[in-house]
Length: 77
Length: 322
Image 1 (cartoon, chains in turn purple, yellow):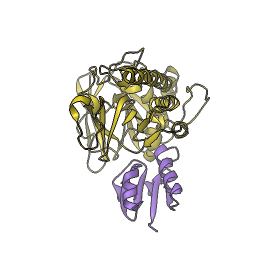
Image 2 (cartoon, one colour; image 1 turned 30 degrees about the vertical axis):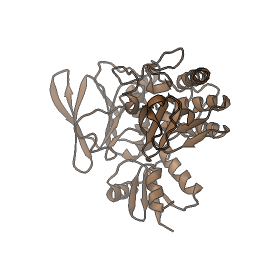
Image 3 (tube, helix red, strand yellow; image 1 turned 180 degrees about the vertical axis):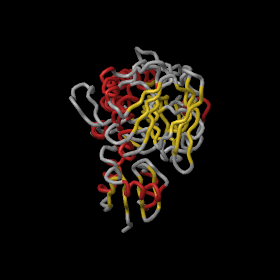
Image 4 (cartoon, each protein chain N blue to C red; image 1 turned 60 degrees about the vertical axis):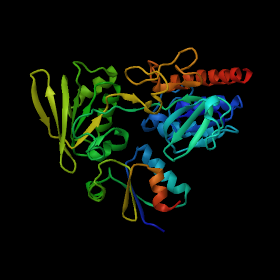
């Protein structure tokens, strides 16, 4: 199974859609809420160069935003 | 060949889909996503019949209603990139084109082509950009068009909100629990958004309002570090040291893919006949924020799309008779 981390904020609709997508496809993921502490935010920024959510890390490959086509391609769905 | 292709999955696309399915039209909906621009809203409180709903719940409600229709085909996520007129008399058998009748061929980003006798364009709008230097480069790197998504990312940071209308004020309020300092700037002389929100903003000691400001350039290296603007009060170029820039200056219509086929106004909105939703070209109807409808509202988009769907139905009955 690929290692997946989703960086999120609490009210972000696209974050929820992203999580729904992984759940519907029975793929487990770790969620990191960047509003909780500065370290998580800095981790996301360093890894992805992004200051917007969601950011999805699939085995070190970064998808910015809920880009369903890109996620499917990386996961070969 | 489909009777009808509906382009878009917001309230207009969904309403058109429900009505065309109930008229038993052979219908295809092509949508990048469901829900329209309200999907990022944290609370919709004016959708008639529902006291309060989040944008995401609203999107799911629309999608579920469409998916409950029998016989409707749905392609999503898929984006229409161009539409071509098919002249039934001249086309002949080119590829798999059905060609015994006039119609339209829709090309998508997935490399697919779909043909139909009629179209409803319900492709909505997208966020207007400032079109200043640095904006594209720093999108997602400090520049944001979604405060419900990104406000919490700017905890303890200095930010600026550009736009003094309803969206600008709501974004400022979204940022208040997080940002350490918020500049709200507008190129107008007065804020135009909801007076209750204006009051809330004026009460906050975190917010500084700057009027008569023309944004000029977004500064930064890997991430945003500032915004340059022209202060029209004293004609001086000034700089705000900020890490976040929230752009809330309205929307533009998603009409590029069909501009050559139908008449549009200066804003790029498709000009429609309000009684029928008809565009300048027979068989193409339009509804919602992509049109020159004055009020960009979910309820109105849905209503306009019902008009367009019933008009498309009548159009199809008429061409059948001919």
